[in-house]
Image (cartoon, rainbow, N blue to C red; front, side, top):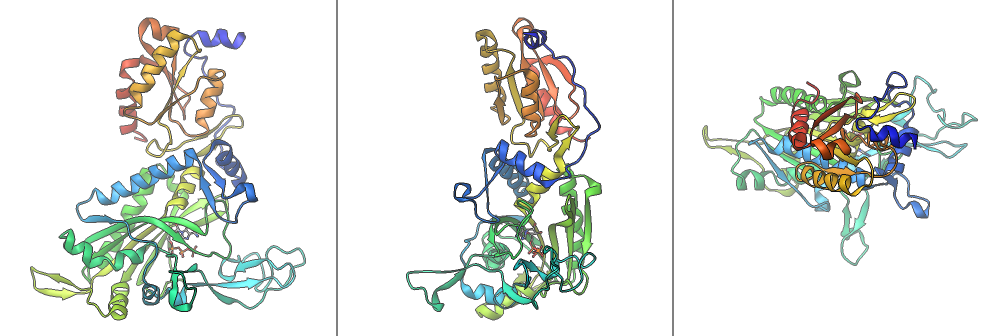
Length: 459
Ligand code: ATP
């Protein structure tokens, strides 16, 4: 009864943080939140799960759509970038030309004692001696590294012979390279221009893990920018700057992002220069996105293997050349994980996701104070008005405080309470997720209020 009395007083007694906000420290806290609230479930869980595959639940699917929409619009709203959606299965020669059949492998080592498997190049040599097992209590010795090709193989057609082998693509980029001229000519683009694509990629990773950080099936958001040789270094710098800014604009904290330049030992066979954008996860600095100057390697290889010219003809100066490519490649799931890790806050009592509103699964939640017809009627109408513009939800169960907490945990930026004052004077209480501040505003100004806050988010 006490709770009801305080609720009936309209705007709730102000909330106080239990302590200073803390970042995510233990990935298990995020994994359990993700499962409990429907962001991500382990794939085939009823059968005990399948390693390193995850299913996105209702909120995860919404968040992922938002990630993809923001990326897609950033890229394709530009007049110099076209989007495509290429098939996952490609001609097997593609993967010979790209170098994946011969070289897309990681060095695999096994512990002779506990039989655990590792990627030799990912063992932290500041902590373990070369050849020593990182997980085994008896400090077992490791086998010599063997190269393990990461491509998933399958067969096309009814015969399972070597002539029918096809691969599940390990990256989306090749679908762009082989379509370079199709896109350039059909869209009447002139170099420099880019092609963007979002799609699934598959890698038979040796050591997947850390939730959705490294999985065997994932989605990539890749953009390949075709430039005149000689201008590639400039474009590389421009794309580096544009891509880190993209993460910052989505609210990812600056002190958790850094560039890592690939040294001569790390540089892939195709790359003239490569930088990773890294993020500081609870398990250390790790790659989030790669930006590569791929030179004319890719188009050159496809010319060689297909026997077809993949040159650009510059009409203005009557010049023919194979363009250089500057690539930006970010994992959709990897970015989604960063958005959750970066947004996670706890003050010892409350847990909230400080997601950028462009990413939040819901932008606003509407709460009728009680399930009374006059409140429900107002609240239903308000909900239907708001959802025309913003993805919204309602919650009618439990105290208002509990309802706030439920939405905080999934990152809904605003909560709106409809109470008896609303019915008499048309105002509602709007409560902000991050500051917990509450304001009383006219209900018919709600949409424009939210619009204004979203436009000025973070400013
Ligand atoms: P690593 O060396 O860590 O295996 P990589 O350098 O081979 O990764 P890229 O081929 O550059 O990775 O892939 C581009 C992006 O795709 C990565 O920055 C990452 O965001 C994403 N990505 C790559 N592999 C995976 C994976 N197994 N699971 C999830 N995302 C991935």
